[in-house]
Length: 81
Image 1 (tube, rainbow, N blue to C red):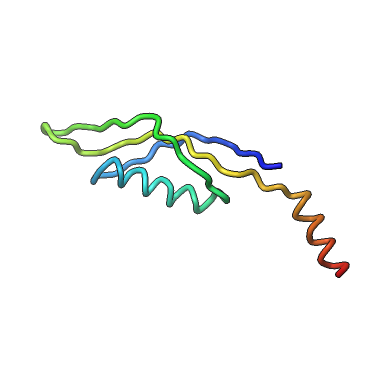
Image 2 (image 1 turned 135 degrees about the vertical axis):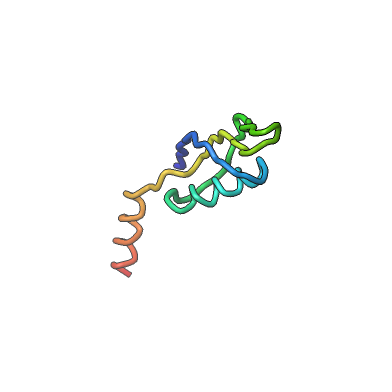
């Protein structure tokens, strides 16, 4: 059985909302295994001197939960082969 967990993160970029999304996924993948998808919840920006100075995105990131008991069981089966 597969299960997924969801977390909400905020990404930042000086270039674009797309860049903020891409960088957020890259960062999340460093500490979360088995990423399966994202939902963009909100896009916003900070303005300085009449121009956008920073792009922000709120993301819902989903990832599969590791099934540790199955991994242990599979390793035991391999040892007996």
